[in-house]
Amino acid sequence: MTDGRIHLNGMKTFAPAHTAPGLWRHPLSQAHRYRELGFWVRQAQMLEQGFFDSLFITDGLGVLDIYRGTAEAALREGLQTPVDDPLLVISAMAAATARLGFVVTVSCTYEQPYALARKLTTLDHLTDGRIGWNVVTSALDSAARNLGLTEQLSHDERYARADEFMEVVYKLWEGSWEEDAVVADRAAGVYADPAKVHPIGHEGAWFQVPGMFLCEPSAQRTPVICQAGASPAGRAFAARHAEEVFVSGQRPDIVRAIVDDIRGQAADCGRDPRSLKFVTSMTVVSAPTAAEAHAKLDDYRSFASVEGNLARLSGTVLVDIGQLDLDQPLEYVETAGIQGIMRNFTIADPARRWTPREIGDFMKVSGYGPLAVGSPAQVAGELERWAEEADLDGFNIPDVLPPATFADFTELVVPELQRRGRVWPDYEGATLREYLGEPGQPRVADNHPAARYRAPKGFSQLPAEDPGRRSTR
Image (cartoon, rainbow, N blue to C red; front, side, top):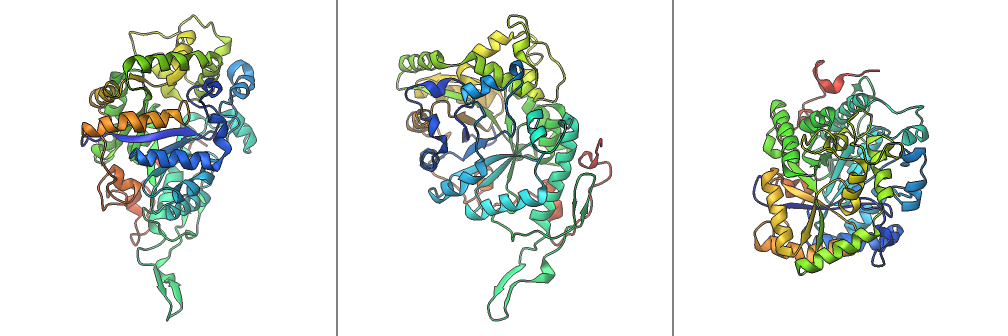
């Protein structure tokens, strides 16, 4: 850990089911209210009361139709389908909160950088600098077919495109408008000084963006860049670009190996490896006593759907688990899916060979990550253990049973973490980047790749040997 403070993100998706398929059926679950604005507003207010850094909203553009070759299991479970657009709910939550940050997942595989840069800057304006972007590349063929491609781009090709995508948005956010371009001079009749707003003149392998950015700079200019890929290409991408990295694994030592690797690569890129914040998903089931917490977990597990979890796993690693022997160990294969999850259940732990049935049982409540269950003191101790052993800076807390999960955590666990000095007593700074770094520093660090495009430095192209400029097209 960098400073001893545990950073917290609430983790949700804009659908009935996410990390714990089947629990939407629980009588206390209000997951079906995902379509209601008031439901999201109340959840955001609850997280702010618990001094969370942010609400992290995951997303996916494709139907999970790999399992047994159909989307039937996903539809029965409300698993990623139906799913609404998370960008559209953020401004309402921001209006109802004052400090909570918002990290939103948007795939750069199907977006255009010029348009997405405007959307994220708009949200950064409307939230006074509380926006982060979880940069992902999309793997599902169902998304590719519906978004104009006959087939999905290859895994490494998606990351090559993503590197150039980042170059374009950095130029737009950091370089197109000089810091004092907006003068708002009523007497002279000049809102923006034309001499201080520049076209970026980008011509690359994937994108041609000649013009100037549409938006004046926001509080952060570049939103906080988050990333979750654990494949070799994903780790390299995180080392170059990410300020907050989402990692996963069943044990702290598995996660620590990923953290150490990405920190080392970040240093090789000229970045401060400690400027990257590492966060893992940790499902928490807590109650005033350990016995009550374990009874609650047993109750939750009775509603879990093993088939729903296997459908989720199939859609994640792009292997039809329904066609495999559920009692034979899963073998590692290279796919266009999320390779980090495949590695975690096959080769990351030489001492453990997981069968699909065991994976489905493991995922019942906690999804792909670990589970902390017990009294507030026990949960806080487990979070501290993971933070120290895996060199983590914080945790994504999945909302497995809304609104009970976030309510239990904020009412029971947060006070214990505050007592231990692990969660701040109040927000420090005004922007999401300041929460992760230093109050008074809302802009990207000087050693972040976005900084090289700061106006008025101009728009020199990346070196030809930079991996971000390579394409396999």
